[in-house]
Image 1 (cartoon, rainbow, N blue to C red):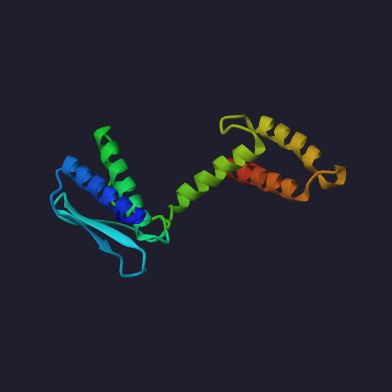
Image 2 (image 1 turned 90 degrees about the vertical axis):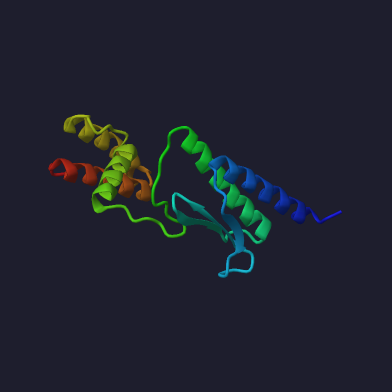
Length: 165
């Protein structure tokens, strides 16, 4: 009887064959990744170009191959539900968001920290900040770290609205 990992690898390769058959992809290959001893890449020809998915995370090549299959199968399923995508990037090379997007995310996080909504009037935001600042103030037994976080959130909101804190 073949070792367990060999059976898992054979099952994953069969699953990949099935996924590519459903995608109508005929040319594909699973190749060892030259960067690591256990990494693997799955290359396939689709949309008139070669595409590649690789995984280097796990200590066993069979596990890395399975992760490649899981991603490809989920992409196939997503396409069936009308999801489209282009230029997917690696999670190991985090895509840098535009400064405007980063500012918007920081602002939404500030509202979350304060417990206010972006459409709340500034007087309500100030009232919420005052109540929470009283509660978290270190002189009243609160946490310095939480007070600083609350203050930064309030300053971010005020700065966005053009109001002095």
